[in-house]
Structure formats: C-alpha cells, structure tokens
Length: 352
Image (cartoon, rainbow, N blue to C red; front, side, top):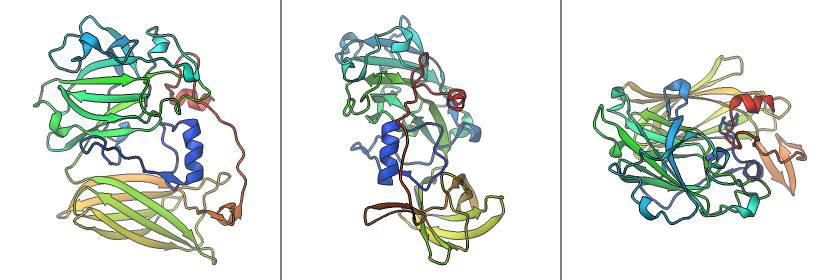
C-alpha cells in the first residue's frame, strides 16, 4: 500500500505522473490476480541486510513477443552461454540492443534475463523474498524453472516470496526474467516521454522470520484544540504481539503501545498527541516509528520508519492541509538522463 502518511518517499521514486495522481487521491492499493504472485511485506533495505543483485546479467533481446526457440530460456538446462551481458539496473535501448522510441512508438519486444545467486546459510530458517523496484513495462519471473510471479505496473515495486523455489544450501539458484514492452497499460506508462525498457531499478533479496510484518498504516486526525489523534493499523503474517514506539523529532520516545495481533495478524491502536509539530512542505518535520514484532517473548522483527503527522482533507471542493486551504503548483519532472535513462542513482537525484 502506498500511503501519504508514510514519509519520506523511498529512494525508488514513483513515476512522475503516477506520483501526482497519488498525491491527489491519497493512496492506492495494487493487487494481483495470482495468489502465488506478489505478496505484501515491509521491505528490508541494503543497510539492514538485504542483498543486491546488481551486476551484469546474461541477456537476449527479441524484437517480438514470440520467443521462438528461446521459449524455454527459464529452464535451468537451457544454455545461455552465448548470450550477451547487460548491467542491471539499466535499459536495453541504451546498450545498443534496440533503437530508443518515443511515447506511443514503442515497438513490440522481449528482453530475456538470466543470472545465478546463492543465499546465506543463515537465511535457511527464514522466508526469503525478492523485490523488483521497477521494470519497464511488464515482467514474468522464474526461479529454478518455476514461475514465481507476474507484474505489469512499471513504476511500482513488487515483491515475491521465493522460499519454496530455492535450491538446497550451497547450491546455485537460477533466476530468469521475461520483460515485455507491450504489457497491460504500457501506453499509460509512456505518455509524452521516451519509452525505454528493461529492469531499470534495483533488484534485492532479503529474509524475514516466518512470522513477519506485512504492512502498516498511520492516519492523522487533528483536533480543534491543536491535538492530533494518531491511528496505527498493523498487519503481520500470523498472530503475534507488537510493541509500537513513537519518537519525537529530537529522538525522545513519547509513546509506547502494546498491540495484540489476532489470528488474522491484524491489530490497531490510537495515540493522542498534544500540540504536535505538524508536517508541511515548508516544515517537513518527521517523527520516528519503531515496530517490534514478538512471539513467546522473543523479538522476531524490528522495523523503523519516519512519519509525518498531517491531515489532508477536501471540504466543499477546497483542498486543505492541516485545516489550511492550499493550492498545488508544480512541474511534471521526469526522472530521466541521457546516458542512463530512468536508472536513477542517488547521486543524479541529488545533483538535479
């Protein structure tokens, strides 16, 4: 779930047009029709132990949706030794595999990716997840010859639970990804801009205990006396206990709540803050939120985030932030560069 209350925006930036739509709509939940496909789970960052799959992958480009003799490319026995290599993340057009096209002129094409990896031995008792931060335009991923999921939302991340498709310890796992240019909604994802293709954002692996956090939601309601009622909803993969700590911008813990998550993994609490510092674009004050998931007195998972306390409303067609009428003005900024396309790096984002 993408939520306005969760700040700041992650480093994997949402597509420009879609980001503005989210700002107006106030949130969007994306689901898949495949029960064994995408899963809801709070991701783990590289600094917290995730493993990046950034490297040169084996690659073959086909100017068609017909894979012909490469139809079985995802099978471990399929020979890809003669294939070229391509860096991930990147666009195949910017590495000479196809001519860049503009907007609705994007041609039918398929990119076939292959690479191998091993997982740490310490992950064996955990659930293992694979996260794609962005693939233009649609993708189907396979692991060791088994399909693990399909995704067709180019500017949004997706996570798959790959635990049951992994090879035994010390064995190589074979990851294969079929990327297509004409997936559902591809024309919406091009609009008036270059239609570049490929795995253009990070691909990471991370491990979580069998009982883990799936999602959380924070909602703010402001009181006439300057107080704020903070509602917290948490979803885990199973029944557990949760400790939620809220810290002021200076780092001091100002509230600690104990939440019992039911058999469906859900639980909630509400906190009243007196005279909190509210978030605005001009004063982007952030509070700290720490979620400790426990079972049998044992700490299973700790998740930390920063949140802004604010209320967005529309009253009689007037858009308000924290009760103050505001007007939105801005530009449609495309995250795109001549040499790397949309394969954004923090250095490029900060330079811009």
